[in-house]
Amino acid sequence: MSNGWLAVSPRAYPELMSSPALLPDDPEDPQVILRDLPERERDTFLAQYREAAEGSVNPAGYQRLRQVLHIWSLAVIACNSPGYYDRTSSGGIREPGIPAEEVFPDWNERIEAARTTRA
Image 1 (tube, rainbow, N blue to C red):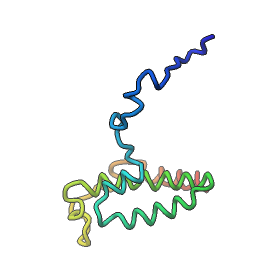
Image 2 (cartoon, rainbow, N blue to C red):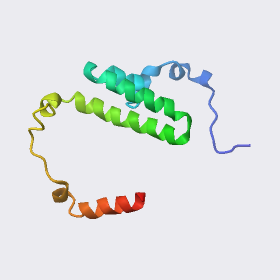
Image 3 (cartoon, one colour):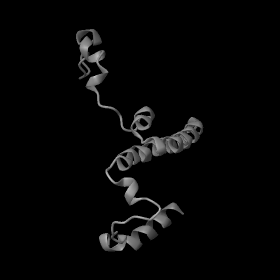
């Protein structure tokens, strides 16, 4: 009797089962983040990761761990972009910014709605 699923034995395609190079790195894998982060960011990442990992024994803590890994995966991209540290040095961001209200005309309403939803 068929349940609609095709059963394939891993022995049928051993090259797929033994070749991790076929799968791209997960950008939210802590080892990938640590590998790709600039040296100067690693201690901060490790501290935040350890704190979130310790709290991940309950469902709410697990969500926090996922959030930390996601944020740091984005930090890897930002920190490795050319000129990142120059743009974010103590002199502040040198590129002009656009106020959120100009990009999103209903910005203040969105913020108020988010506050109301959380309350």
